[in-house]
Length: 362
Image (cartoon, rainbow, N blue to C red):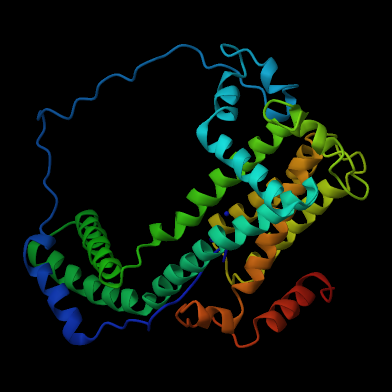
């Protein structure tokens, strides 16, 4: 995330610059309908009517997924009904079939199959989406000088209009913001780089992470599938490695959970180190994500090791992906536009920033 994430900048073609000839027609519209002040409601005029919000029954209190002993034991109408529906949903079943296919094709033990599937998904799905995210954000960043230029001209035009027509400060401010938003939207359309497109990664990666996690939990609790007379749960019970030979059991050593928390914190710090002069909101988001990373440690200690192994591999791939997308050669390969903040030695700069912030400071 160039984290003004949950992480995120990339290029493709060249950076766009708005010339005076291109700026003039856009600002020329200000003399027309765009600079008209907003209508004023007259006293006694009927206002908008809103339908009263519907009040439903009390919400069901849902148990967390790791607190449910077995998916098959959940009462469909009880507190875990929503989780049972999720566990039996088509996306989760698709994730289960994919894991079984990877296990059957590769012939790897289950710990290897989980790692293989995670790496394949990260490489085939999230890495291209992350590169696209960086591409969009790089184009947006390259538009900033042009946006600032428009803002200066627009501010002057609105000030002149306000003086001519006797607008109040409030009306002038509203007119400025309304037209600025319109002009910036035109720039995004022109360069096909609306910032919302940079969120595609989140809308794909988060559901994928949830479906894979639920599928592995179904396997670990014996809720679904059997092969050659043996349930997947029985295979997972002997499909681990090292200090976690049973993938259906918890990691009593807490090694896997602590590694997950540590890797996630490293990712957060890498993003934070690249931010100079963060706003209060960005600082708050950074601290929130740090808290979530720490909270994942006790949560990971209460779920089967198969899930924790998947989470650890996913986090490690996220860290590797984050570092890879800082490589000038890889960014050039992905046709990510150059930005003002790009460096020819990103890893050296990152290490220097880390050393200055956490090691050398007195």
